[in-house]
Figure (cartoon, rainbow, N blue to C red):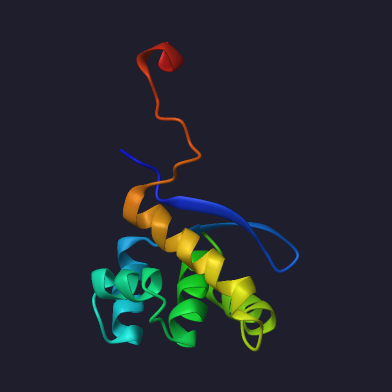
Length: 113
């Protein structure tokens, strides 16, 4: 099973982000489209600003942060920021859910013994 988490710098330190099934449902509700369409909007550069901010916020919550803290962080570090800062992180969060985390080595029989 692939890991769906992404660890990345946001705000003032590194955080863990994960789009769990529950967070995907909320993201789909907020975006008004399914996760496949949202991912396609991101990779084709047809995204909305809300897509970026909500992906980061919900990724923080899915990664274990309390919702209030996630909102405070995104309000401070994602709202009214250059998209060159926020879009790469949002895409990394989506990619981790889509393809798994490529930086984590899969567990092998040798590493578990």
